[in-house]
Length: 330
Image 1: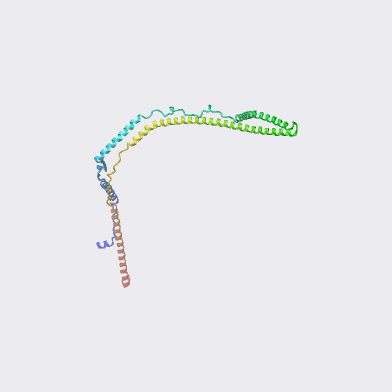
Image 2: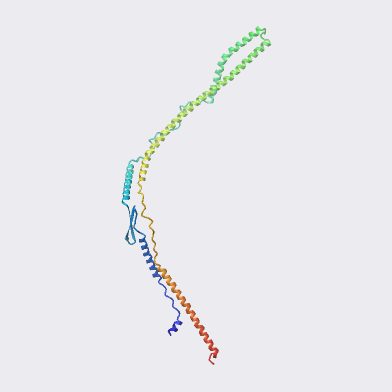
């Protein structure tokens, strides 16, 4: 009966793995693995220059104590002392900083425009023309006062020569000779007039050039004076700004010198990190469930095949009996 019941009883499905318990166990294993890995990656490190010691404070807390070798610790102490002196000096300089508000009231007055009130006045064109006309008239009159007596004497001398030559006054020859002499005298006077104009114009141009040159010289002197005043003011301003900025610059320099001592990064020493993998508890539970299901499926398939075979046998037996005697045997 037991054999028959085993044949006709299908396989029972496996119980499901305890995934919740496996997950909790996996979490606890992960935490413990992290603790182990953390302890393994916190070694005490020693070098010729310094050392780092790790202390377990409990509750997953650790303290790292860094210390220099004695000779390097002495250097650090000296450098800190130098830094303190720099900062003390900078602090003393603070008392010497200007306390008053920045002001330009103590500087020389800003120079203004050039004072042209005392400069030589430039002559106008009317003045130039009037001067040239006076010069022309004076030059012409002086020369004329010398030429006219000569010309009058030349006329008297010509008339005397003509009379002595038997050419009396009123004759054509006498009149032609006098006309020719007077034309020569007119040419001389026209030349004198032109020369007087040139002389007047030259002296007028010289006078204008002299006045212009004098005014240019005076303007140059005025510009030089204004430039010198500006240079004096700029120098005063530069000295004033330097007196205010120099203490600040020195304080900044001293404060910049007060930098921390250079770090001696030697305790790293390329210590290789240690990696620890936690046990695969949850994956083991998953694998166990998958294996149980595979076994169940295999057993179920075998049971199905067995039942199919038994059915075929029963069918064959029934068919043979019918063939021999019918359903009711005869």
